[in-house]
Each structure stands twice: as C-alpha cells, then as structure tokens.
Length: 121
Length: 121
DNA sequence: GGCCGATAGATAGCTTCGCTATACATAGGG
DNA sequence: CCCTATGTATAGCGAAGCTATCTATCGGCC
Image 1 (cartoon, rainbow over the protein chains, first blue to last red):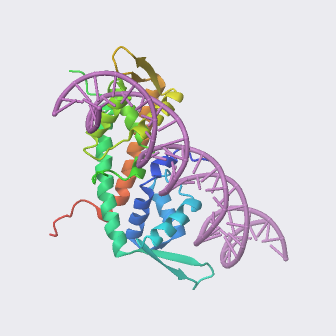
Image 2: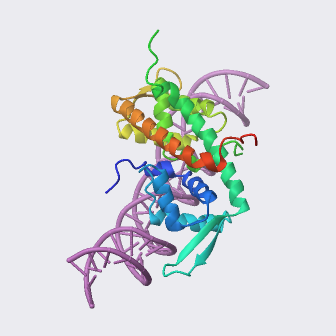
Image 3: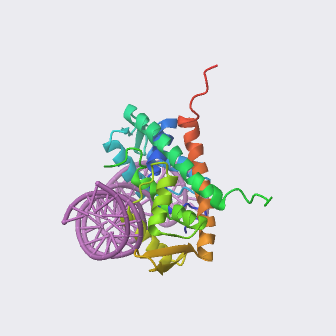
C-alpha cells in the first residue's frame, strides 16, 4: 500500500540525485544502506523504491559523481559507493541551487498560504 | 539562450503546479500574466515556457482546481483563470507537503554542506 | 526440511510532465 | 513592411521515478 505520508513522486524529481549525493557524502554506503538512510531521514515520506535507486546509482556512476567497489567477502554481494571529487563539487552546486529554489517557492507561498494569519490590525 | 541562473528543469517537477496555484491565489490572472509573475518571483530562475504553462493550466482546469473565462472585450483574447474552492484546498495541502519536503531535504543537506561555514574557533 | 521475510542487486516498460518547435493572431514602433 | 511583444495552443521529445519482475543469500520459525 502507498504510505499515506509519502511525498508525491514528482516532487522527488530533480532533488533525489541531490539527496543520494548528500547521503553518500556522510559516508560510503551500498545501495540498500542508502535506501534505508533515506527512509529514515524522510520521516516516513521517502519510500525510495529499489527500481528507482539502482538505476539512479548507475547513472551517477556513469557521470563519475560516485565510484563503486564490490564487496564479496560475505555471503551477500554488496556494491559500495563513495563520492568522487567531482561528485562533491556537484553536491555543493546542486545544494546551492536547491536552497535558492526553496527560498523562491517559500516567498511565493509565504504570503499566499503563509504564517497562519496575521491578526487583521 | 538558456539563462545561466535558470533552475534545472527537473527541479520544477511537482512544484510548478503549486507555484501556479499560489500565483492564482494572489489574484485571478490570464496565462501570460501568470508567466510574468513567475518570471518576476523567480529572481531570474523561473523561465516558464508557454509550452509548459498552457498545458499545465488546462490540466489544472480539467481537475477543477481552477476555472476559466474568456475575455474578448479587447483586441487580444485573454483567458482569465481563478482558483476554485477545491483549488484552494489543494494549494494548502500541497503547500504543507512542500514545506515538509523542504525541511526533510534541509535536514539532509544541513550537516553535509551546511551553513556557510562556522568560523573555526 | 521447508517456508518466509529481510537483505542485496538488477532490468523492462509505463507514465508524467517540462521542454523545444511550431503555429496562429493582434498591437505598436521603427 | 518588418520586428517585437503580447496572447493562446498543440505535437513530439526526453528524463526519471514508478511498478513488476527476476535472481540470490541468510536467519528464524515450526
């Protein structure tokens, strides 16, 4: 079932890359750990599906923003990912963009549906 | 040419509806005015194309979130849009979702690439 | 010994929606 | 007369998050 608190899927567009880069900036992780970290960070709103995450990781790697290494030392094969230098620069750039964007929306929303209601003088 | 400050297109996904609803909540407008208002509000970052805006308005109207009325009283045909009651509820709902989402990203970004840089003591 | 859920990764195909390109029409300035 | 701004509209492209499906290992339970 669709978690009722889940964010509308389209909202994730364009910012999911940023979130994954951010999660990998915290520390190297393999896919499943990235997924769990996002789930935890999203307060129930981020239900990132495996079918979303793995292609995304492949894309980030193809763009040289992250780098991977297989770990076969245990019974379970795990593909660890870490940020590259390029990835860190990209993260900082996208984070700046995102803040600017969020401010912009905040300004638009503010007056419209904003602070509960300024008591009419 | 692509405005260099323009937000990556994918960022707009899922929040452009919200912005248009918000702009129409300010006051009724026709398409071209909505476009100009967004352009102005975006500080150069929101270059919403006509080919994006009009289908979006049609979709919002099909969903009964906005309502339209042609004005042929001048040489230029204008289609004025205004929020419906349903649209206003939707705006409030999406605005809440957006704030929650923005907080969530903010938390993820915060520690990673956070506040400019606390002067090292 | 067998089943099931969690763990771990991957791909195919669908859908949505912002984009470019294009079209049409009017108003005003050079 | 052309060029720009104004004003609306549609067709088709591409990106990316989704569902559905597949493979495989491990531990717990009965």
